[in-house]
Length: 396
Image 1: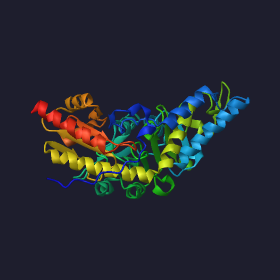
Image 2 (image 1 turned 60 degrees about the vertical axis):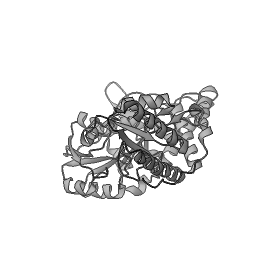
Image 3 (image 1 turned 90 degrees about the vertical axis):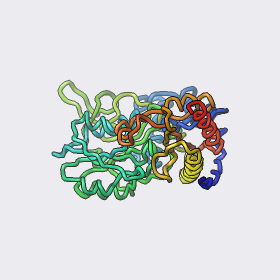
Image 4 (image 1 turned 45 degrees about the vertical axis):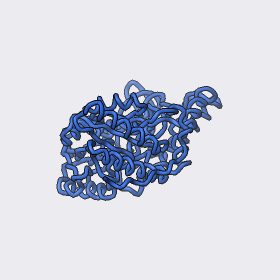
């Protein structure tokens, strides 16, 4: 029998989340629950402060414009960037599509991805006409950067990798990835959806050229995401979509465009989404991203030890995965596991997690995934374990 991992000390923020009372929510990797501070910020923006931005000459519009642009600066500073380097998008998926579609290829038609990438970091490159090369994984489920170093070539325009895997929880060595990409003049894009809620990020020091993250996984609203890009790269990229707000002068013969980031934000933006995202960042930084990371590390260790002790669970990914534990119950489809756990008041993810190539590599149709957040605690793990024992009793 394995030695039980130490019980993780709770952050005592469970009561910040009104939607999880009496519920064991272990699906934060797909979308985080919202703390009351974020809910209040969104409600207040609609109920008392709402006006459109960048257009009105009246005071409330000017105030809302200032709040929206302050949210942009907040989204930038959270990852160590500058406001002028941040484009607001509908989510990280749209951010990756934007880069894939409008980044000049400069005669390089290949992109280097890894075997654990989310579909949102695969399909956009296919649609943009790139040829894809796939970096394998190490035995414990990390991106094999030694292999990447041998695969990179002058034909690669971009290396696009997940900072944290949404299935395995493995953390990328960003500095090494940047060194490999830049060795042949390729650019490094990082999918930070799973990293932003749980690890400290400093894009200016990282060597990344583009960084993306989504609001709804960071305790914020849906429909808002962030694309950070180095200013010189954004300046060299043409517009993606046309419409209001991204223009300088329009005639029927010719249109000129605003500089980045406005150049990439056609139409009325998700104003309140930006304000909600800023409130979520304030909430996270009020706790401390390092504290959240340490808290989730403890929960992962505790969960993996408890699941291993059951004797009928196969674990995936490295031992020190970031906030995510993927597993399968021997002889039971993950959908059946998820259904029984739901009856016990436990919410996990069961499926391919938008990583079908990774599932093929792992040799399974799907996995179960428990993912933690700041509000998670040992009680969630205890109920998960008891639920899995029920799964075993039912299926034998």
